[in-house]
Amino acid sequence: MMAQSAEVLGTSQVGSFGNNVQCPVCSLEISAGQINSHLDSCLQGKAVGGVPGKKRRLSSNEESGKEVAQQPGKQFGPAGPTFPLFNKSKSFTGPSECATQSLCTSPSSRKQGVSVSSAEALHCQEDDDYRLPQHNLTPDAKKPNNLSEKLNGKPLADKMRPTDLNDYMGQKKVLGENTLLRNLLQSNDIPSIILWGPPGCGKTTLAHIIAKNTHKSSCRFVTLSATSASTSDVREVIKQAQNEQRLFKRKTILFVDEIHRFNKTQQDTFLPHVECGTITLIGATTENPSFQVNTALLSRCRVIVLEKLSVEAMEAILMRAVGSLGIKVLKVGEQPVHSSSDVSETPIYVEEKALTTLAHLCDGDARTGLNGLQLSVQASLAAEKDPIEHGIIIKEEHIKEGLQRSHILYDRAGEEHYNCISALHKSMRGSDQNASLYWLGRMLEGGENPLYVARRLVRFASEDVGLADPQALTQAVSTYQACHFIGMPECEVILAQCVMYLACAPKSISVYSAYNKVKECLKNHKGPLPSVPLHLRNAPTKLMKGLGYGKGYKYNPLFSEPVEQDYMPEEMKGVTFV
Ligand SMILES: Nc1ncnc2c1ncn2[C@@H]1O[C@H](COP(=O)(O)OP(=O)(O)OP(=O)(O)O)[C@@H](O)[C@H]1O
Ligand SMILES: [Zn+2]
Image (cartoon, rainbow, N blue to C red; front, side, top):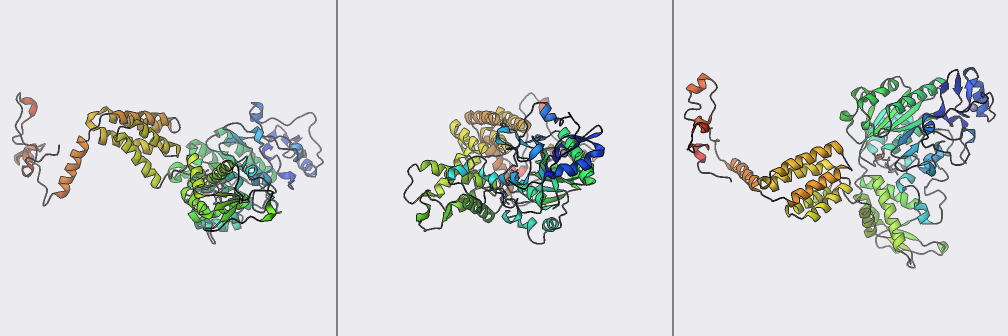
């Protein structure tokens, strides 16, 4: 068992009720005057002074019967159950964190869609045991025999989440030698920061590492996900942070994932507390914070821009994962050598080339890369019922298959994005509903921005359907608006409806090609452009009238016969585009 300092346990439960204060260690209510002496003894394991008969007060979550994160085993003594204060959309309980944070979540306490992360008390002891947690899946860790067992449970990306900077790859611009963040980390003084970067580039991971590196004594690390936390959750965190500060002079580092999802009022709630230092805020966002984060809050935080992971960084991450799984890497042309020592296990290899391909395909997103690796390994294990004598070799094809199966062989920014939208456009033009829907699906399931697709449909409605069915444009614009209101995944059917409408619609490019001819004509015109014929000019002033503006113009409604009149400049007479 990890040497847990009792002090960090149950800090999430610090609260004061009347004149009593809840002991953060044993959860008993202690009168305020006795709390200090109680704590001393409680920390040594001999609690005294609890108010008899009074039980630990339930958190609002418990009272409302919501799930309660149960400590796996009872190794942490009387603190008993811990409280999930916040539901998070993403779980941060990688194995390494279990080792460092006293409050783990057992799988059984997790329900679909809601994973619980208690207000995690992070203990930052001087000892090294969180560096190499026993159940951490690092190459040095003890490995279970069976590879498929190792792949069970949490996604590989979670298992591989680095716990210290040495394993944190890439991001040299912000973390290299002599960078601001590195210096701050070394000086143990972390300001409030906003980490801005694309998905899977390591924002969450960095927040954890920062928290671990700061305040060697001890600090609390609390996480909130802006997607599910309410303003009252925020207030609760602040209240507890104040208690911590007051009772233990302990800092709270609050990590808010997807901070851009908080509305301005919620962001405002933090502000004074960030300012006075009760809370050190680490926010993570994939969106440009200058638009999405409250300016007042933004001005109190340093914005750290993380980048998509480079192919080299991705390769290093994959290598580390492969090593921890006990998979051997085969260089080009190298043959597997079956050593007699590991007869009990079928040796598993991966071609180096396959890893390189994966590193390229995952578009700088380490989560995608690691999960893709996991799927390919699992797929090749399943396929190889009767493993060949020399073991199983994971090849490039397996990696591609693995990615495809998980719908992630789709490069949102790169070529695949353009290839698919082009295929969709051409399928609709060819009135092939099936193919149109297929390409739409490829994009949406691959994580394409629905508005990007909707914008293309608007263009298509005019360029390809045009006057053959002018209603198509209305349909497409409505689709765009509906996608905007609703977002994914609900808007997928709306897009599908419009795609089918457009595929079935009659097509006409008369407008499109006519307008292109106009542009062409203007581009090729030599010399000064012809002036606007006088009779077509408006004459709002006397002077203009005097100059002959509007003279001789025939106002069509006044004529019962069709009007003979030139609308083109003299030089352009007879030129047509339609
Ligand atoms: N720089 C890195 N070095 C090593 N591993 C990384 C790095 N970045 C990400 N990972 C791996 O990818 C997984 C996902 O990363 P993380 O949760 O930190 O991404 P994120 O930027 O917070 O993404 P999101 O915006 O989707 O929440 C981690 O569990 C870790 O295994
Ligand atoms: Zn106690």
